[in-house]
Image 1 (cartoon, helix red, strand yellow):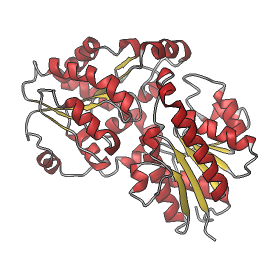
Image 2 (cartoon, helix red, strand yellow):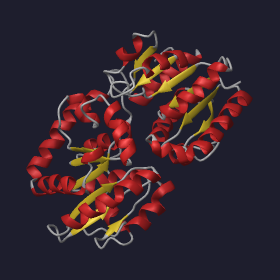
Image 3 (cartoon, rainbow, N blue to C red):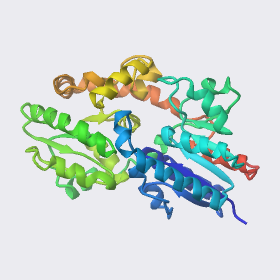
Image 4 (cartoon, helix red, strand yellow):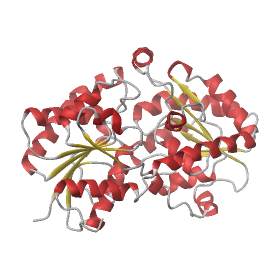
Length: 389
């Protein structure tokens, strides 16, 4: 009988990772089956999710509390489904806050199924003790970053650097941008600004009001300014409503292909911190990042976070290449000043892109594409790896 892989992810970035992994697994083992929880990208491949993952997609400390009863309900639902389906392998993707609790419950119940985690918890940034915890909860770890395995291997956890699949996500960058602009009502000429307030509802509520104020000030310098705010289906309506009173002309395209077309067409981007910085770098779009929580969470994060940088490119470079405005520095005036500087100095903005792309190239493993390598790890764990790989 064909093998069943149970995939657990709780946010859009993990959904995209898992969808790439599913495609690679099907190429190498066509009869493999999938169950679990995922999002839009996985659904496009025929995946039926146990529940809507937007219900558990939340970051922060204080921000989690209102959703805690629902999160615990979904956790119990996932546990029951795993025990009912008895999959051949469990693959948890990102969302360490949720999946670590799930894995802990599975361990207590002595569920003897191989467990692979895809995307290491960011122990280099905060909570280093999670490396020891991960070694107790999972059998194998697939990392996106070449510097991550040593943090976990010292506790006896087998690690594989598989690379970052954003390399593959942005592989189809030959779309006709004229068609993209025409379909979304974007003027052929003019200054196109990409605004990315995140993929979670609470991020949009917190960041978009700040970004709108920045847009208002930038429009005084760029009368031809047009804003494109690519989003995911789960929150696109919320983004459109939030932008409805913004006088600057704008559009909210949905879908991964539209997202990358928006990046490539834009002169500059203002983005929430996260994987999006790699996507923007791959598309050659100069940008800055910003992120904040409520004041209580900001104070807690300021004490717990040990990394000097929030941006992934900056972490690799160990210096500021991409401007960061996080926590207390996520302020309209600071973001506006830096955005204006880079938008008025395209030579400086392009130098940022050139430097960032040097470090972006480190994210691809030498032997194969990231999703193919991740699939090989899964199949090897299942004892099914193609001998020719």
